[in-house]
Length: 542
Length: 75
Image (tube, rainbow over all chains, first blue to last red; front, side, top):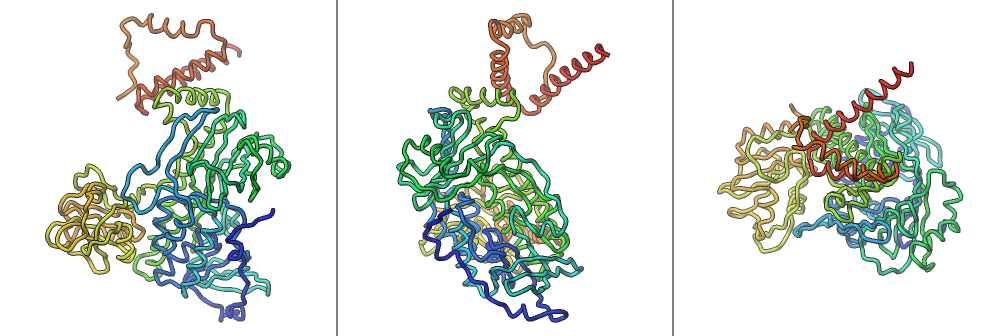
């Protein structure tokens, strides 16, 4: 359908012949990593790897960034990852920031929630941004990095696993060619062709109800909040969602019956009256219309020999909770540093297995959460509908009822139960446990400039980093480990006391952060042998 | 805390009666609505997932036993 957006000029990319296409047989080009699929996950992974010094070939079978808004909600965690990739500011400047959600039942509001009710974080709970903007900004960043070779209209048509890597056959407008890669990362989406090539299945649950998703352009005075309705007056008996995007675009989701005719329901002339009933006027234009049956499923194993799956190719969830693109980005940040270490032979290949362990557990959690939300919106049995109705009616008068209403539980990073963590040996009353992502907090530089812990972590090189809270002399850290000191002589100043509070800090407290910003271990007093043991464990060395 | 199946009411008949009377005059559908709300209210009051799971298991075993008995009688 007609698609007019300001990113249009940036979304079309030309195919260019590459010298690799002249090579064949024993002369075929060899690369450490080939990433397949230039969506948000593949682009972000390629950038992270490149910033770690890896050469990356990034293939995409199209020559343009996908149409339609698709993913729109990007989480705090994703923004912190994009900060590390150098694109966070652009995303946040263009995106609309939000943290409040409201749930309505019928015509009246049941309750509202705030996803980030406290100050002192660099990034908001969420921004809404059309996926094509995110992809365009990531492509701009890719073009600044000579380590990445982005090849449009390069479609992988065959894959042959070898002991030490993978041979790929790639079709282009000028015929096919081969490359060899030590590792291939498949970020080629829910209908992944690489997944089929390795013969992996993709099992899970399909929901019967259909959801109509429309992006409409209109000027409206609704606040920048996520509004969700059960049984609204304009769409009786079903659920609805309204959410703002940049450029006066609004995302509208309408739940339809399982037996609705998908072809007819997608026609603009049939969608229009539904939206008119919702908005009470007809002053809007369609940007994008789509109709989905949601699926929740994942691959049994995310790693098949030297082919690794990330994002929608590995796992798929229903969209209520913003757990699709965000979990794919979490896959990318989890995989990049591990793959880099394995390619540099700093860690054994077994470190990659922890990518599967950590991210498949996260996928299970995302599937569980989004399945519960979808089931709540579309109860399966009559008694299930009755219980749902009871929750909605109890929510009017009771706090527990409000908290049981499930209009989508929004994405938060998983806490990894992982062999890379060293268990707590000291007493903690709070702070992030091993396996949790680092909380942000404002800090003041010695020179008086204000900053955030997440930014200081980036300046330390997004490597293993010891975050320590002042206690006289700096801890004795192994080579190659970054340090962030809060308090003490020469350290960052925790003027508001928020860093100390969020990390349950006492003088001498130290957190060993992984290169992806997750906590590997924490100590009340970081003695060198314990630190070395934790570092070895987090590197997959024992 | 484990599910308590000892008798907790001083006057069990009063408790049973209170529930029965709440259903008097209701259609089956209304009764089912009432039960659904009542289960949720009481579950929240208990506020312990392990106890709730035990209670569900006990109740479910009862309904399974009853349906098996029915089947045996029919045979």
